[in-house]
Figure 1 (cartoon, rainbow, N blue to C red):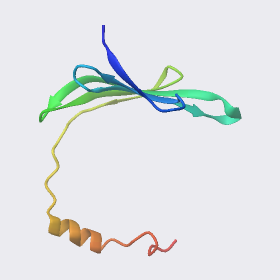
Figure 2 (cartoon, rainbow, N blue to C red):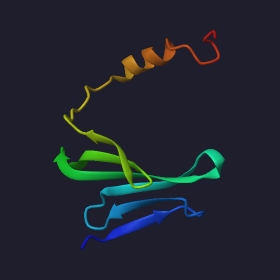
Figure 3 (cartoon, one colour):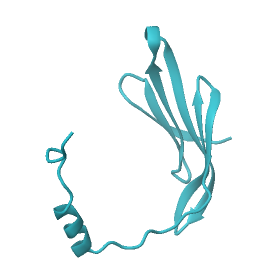
Figure 4 (cartoon, rainbow, N blue to C red):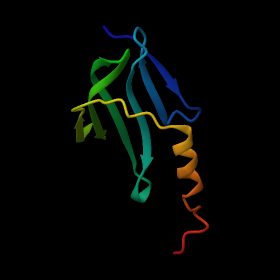
Length: 104
């Protein structure tokens, strides 16, 4: 049997289950109010963890609404992005217009 820690917000509409041994996120759950004040439950499950550079990543992420699978995402490849120098980052920030400067 698997044992999980349950982390809950105050109104009990959201929670996360975390694996007690490896501290991997097992699932997230949130109640969403839809049309006509109907409540739907969104649940995201993480499965088949693999280690990459000393960190566990889920190979499969499944999205459920009211316990019905509506999307499954499979991790195909993990890469470490190239490093970004401080000079390049500073140049990028200085040359990116702020949202107020962008004309609509």
